Image (cartoon, rainbow, N blue to C red; front, side):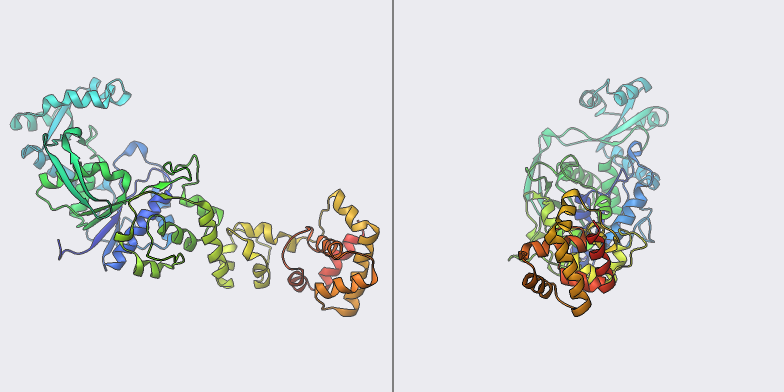
Length: 470
């Protein structure tokens, strides 16, 4: 295997959205494939036809493309190892399960239609079915192959008994499995479709996969997969199982406690750079305390020996911090394009506007609320705010400001406050609050100096005059 090409794969099922854990798996495979000058393959594992969601495959491909993860082969690309959808590979699998039956490593179990119905409905549990099916373990090969032509059947893999399987994981290290604890798994279902275990092994071998990097939830499947490889006299790939993603309470990450759909994060305005940087550090870290990486730096720095064995907490506040970092780092011309889907079409934003609020923006969707006051001609003031503006001191502050604008514009808000304070018996806080409320509709917010530069004198006067009329 030392001289074999480096080939990795990401193999999602089109049963819904792309999970953030799935994106992390795809990312780690991408980083390792690029680092080792290998290829990355996208394979759609759609053998469970009952769970397919219309449009899910297209959304998976679209979301992966958004993330910047590049595939060399897949259902949307050309390649020498297709088809890349398992449902289009059904004819490929038959010769291999027949080979396993003939070599005594697998056996068919024959089912009447009633028994199939009972299994499907739950009247017959999978545990009871496994026990009953053991009667088919010893069979006459010639009679069995003939019977398969006319009767309903499933096929089970024979798990050797009285043995242990020793396995080395690239991340978890050495693991031993007691094969006595593992039931004979179904590898071909009654509809003729392969189960995940069987199709996975056949496809990985035929596609020349050298490394299988996947989630920890697949670790219990390893004995079945290794036994399949051995039964077919194939060398297995190298395996590495990634640590689980966890909620803050250390339970497995779930949609009940966190948003887990990548598509939802896109819709909320998270940037691919922020999400990718965040996910890369969920389970992997270089020595030291560095946290900011672009994709090229991740390719250069990533290594499986720095991937943790234990789970990683999905900390949304940390993701928010990464996203805000990249918002602040983005060039305005590029950021403006991204913002176009989050802002009203009639808003013409400038770099000065974005610079004014970007420190406060966690996501791209935040900009609409943060910038909205700049596009309001007349603010709606509350009863208490109107009292502040029309009080004796408030009225004098606003009118004094209009005079200063006529005589001294452009001027800084500090200069304005100083001049007003010298002529009126008002506190600095009262002056600042009154002017900010009149100019922004709020009592707190970004720099008034920068806001006045964006407004220009006519809009400043418009807001102050309107505030005087309350």
